[in-house]
Structures are given as structure tokens and as C-alpha cells.
Image 1 (cartoon, rainbow, N blue to C red):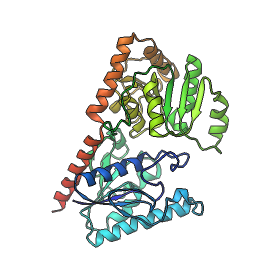
Image 2 (image 1 turned 90 degrees about the vertical axis):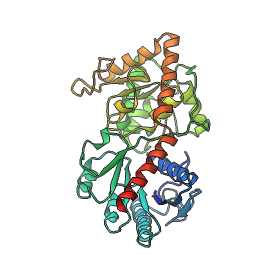
Image 3 (image 1 turned 45 degrees about the horizontal axis):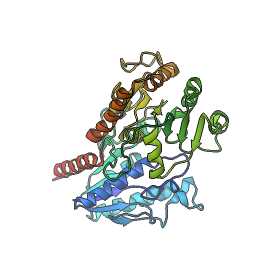
Image 4 (image 1 turned 180 degrees about the horizontal axis):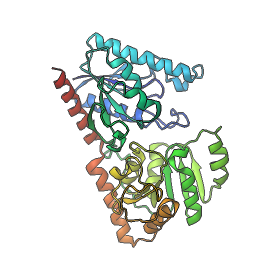
Length: 377
């Protein structure tokens, strides 16, 4: 197949800690880069649309010499305009017959273009279908195919032209996220330090339980949330914070942690960090929002907690809700008999091996590509 993987000018591929701007995760870019590389390995002819400083084994097509997030002369509005320049370049080439299919990192932006070419577009929905995104996509329900990254993500617009739900996958055979024993007693969170990630709730629970937590990620340092709600609590003793780490350093924190804390305050469409943690054997304690009930096996790979008495999404093992429920879940893990805890770590690893590998993800995308191309024939 001749495949266009339409990524972004904004973050250089593959994403690295130093190339991802503060307040961003780089996760969608990481997924699209992985798909492009693996499709090349499978023998497909792949064109990757990304910034000129990206590294890839596919044909690299660019509209900028370097990632716009790294170019101080380009402001936020300019970065969006350059995204449209890259997207239009992709669709112009599609009109010239370069591709059989376009796989887009964008939902809304590629929808504006997809209707003008005969080559089909499949868009992976990397973010929740809410706000203006919902309003706009309701005008483009059939103009492109959509891949949801969890079934929960579909709820706001259940009648989009979905072709599949494909869970993200991670590499397990290159030692990136290898199994660990959880030999230390700290808790961790990995990701953007933003209100929707439940950072305040993590700090509240850690203080209440007097358990050490490491917050591994960056915040918008000019924000009131960081300066008023979070920074004053970081004492580098009970509450610790580091920026995004290299894979080698991050892996060690995952492997040695007692648990991964994920009390999200929004409808997280997937949550790549949950499967990274479980791949290293680290169980997850999370609120039952978004994709969490699809990813965590309650009582087997961690504990799911309802976020409040008014928002119960399942009859979980932990009956308390909110902060009290989080604290009970954490205490359950810390008080487990050694062999029971070891089994939970083994369960976590096995769950990822079965359901969340790169190989499974790429195979499912390949099937979707072929299915779409066959529909066009």
C-alpha cells in the first residue's frame, strides 16, 4: 500500500523530552511516528508528513525546516498556519495520485480537506470529542473514516463514521518498558502537570497517607495552577517533581514504583502512561473516567475508583469514592501480602503483553487500511 501518514510540524519526530514543549505530551506524535516506521518495516510505501528535522525511514515530506515549537520566530497562530500548509501539501499530493490512503493525526483540520479528494482519509481521534471539536466534526461525520482510541471516546458523537477502535500499543521487545519488581515504596505520576490530570488530588492523597510521590512531567510555569496549587507543595521529600525524562530514566521510576497514580479529572481518551506503567509491572490506581475501565482490570492490575458519589461508573472493589476511595485503594496495595502484590505486578505485565503491544496496534491499523482501500475499489 502507498500510505500517507499525516503528522504535524509542531513537534519533531520521534518526540524526545527536550523537543516536546511544556504543557504538551508528544503522545499522538509518538504513536504516528511508530505507525509510520512499522508500516515501512512491513514493506509498505510510506510518506511521513512532519517537520524537516524529523528522522524517519519513510519518505519525509515537510513544510518547515524544523519543528515550529522549536522556532522562536513562530508564534502560536503561525504554528497553526504552518500546520495547514503541511496538510494542504498532503492533500495536493493525494490529488496527484501519490497515495492509496491518508492516515491523519488531525481530526478537525483534516476533515476540512478530506471531502475534496477521492483518496480516503482515516483520522485517529487523539483527544476527547468535546467543545468546538464536537460541533465541527458533527458537520463531517461521513467525510473521513475515524479510529477511536477507546470505546468511551465515542460517546459524545456515537454516529461518526467509525471504522474501528484501536488501542495504543508500546514496544516491549527492546527493553524500553521491561518488567520491574517495585522494590521501592514511592508512588508516581507521569504526564502533563495540568488540572485535568488530577495533580492536586495526587498531592492531597499523598499528604493524607504520608506516602512519597514523584510527579514526572512539566507544567505551564506561568499558570496560577502551577504557582499557587502545585509548586508550594513540592518539598523534594514527600512531594517530588522532575520534568520529562529519557526512556532509560523513566523506565527505572516505573519499574521501582509501588503504584502509578492516575486520578484524572476529565474523559481521558486513552492514557498511554497507564500501559507503560503496567508493562513495567506497576499497578495503577485511577478514577473511573474516560478509557480507564477499558484499560485497567479492577483488582488484578490495580484499582478503579469512582470519582464521586454522584458519578458512579461501576461497582468496583473499592466502595469509597473521591479522595477517600483513592486513599483506600493505595492502602490496599501497600498492605498486600508480598506474593499477592507480586501477582498483581505479573498480571499487569501480562495484560499489556496481550492487549497493548505495538505489534497488535500496527496489525490492526494495517487491516483498517486494507479494509478502507477495498471499500474504495
